[in-house]
Image 1 (spheres, rainbow, N blue to C red):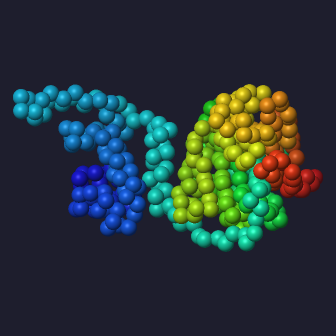
Image 2 (image 1 turned 45 degrees about the vertical axis):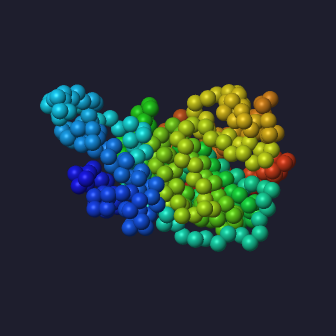
Length: 386
């Protein structure tokens, strides 16, 4: 069992393996360490899986490990008449970082971060028949913009101040029992340290190092959630995947889910698909970035995905982004709303002729009557302008 220590990615995992070698059962390890038994079993299973990929799984007669950067693709084993291993061929291949593997590694990195959120007192009174929705249109955290070139300055420090001010302004008079914070995608401007879009390879203007941008983005969302907890009894967060942040959007969701693991007032959606839904009485809300399905397709997609509850709803709305402008379109089966962003354009988008006002909203829904109120936070259109 001690051989599995080589395949642990954190001190917590090493402690679990050492305790398991000594005690022999996951139940005993969980009892001794004061942790959840199911999480202990999951951790041991993941470590064994990681070891098996490298060629070590003695219970399956696999003891020939492969070189770093390679994975076992398969094994062929010859046994003698007594069932002992006589010969074994190990087929290897270059390791490929699958999406599932990335999720697993992210969760490992976040183990020491899990359940560290502080208790925040909620409102004494709230309206259980209303829902406040906070759509964040394409935040592009990490984007760098120079006013002399684009008309507006923007960097990580400005993003922290701007999104903090917007959430405080929009939430200060909220009375709904539940808040739904929607990040419609492109939360991060770049998805890695190469500062290029993953699909088209376009160069991006990015402020500071990628790790620092991740920290800033997570901090902005934590601040929004903690502010929402002061005015709402429960907070749900949906982080849609955009075309700029295929992987970092997943990391954002997993980070928040780990941090608020100890808070039953916070729900972080960690589903990695392109389409998300929230059902509230007669209201059904859909969330997607808007870079894949065409807008008229969204109604039928919602109907098919939510076939079990669609008949219970009357007010069906999609919240999307991608185009960085306000657009509200009524279709026969739903409404599609595109949201503006608080973030200004970068050098490329300004040079290409794109322009939009910058704003963020709070939209209030009644459980029976649908939308009944909205509040808008506008960025001063004259800021940084000559």
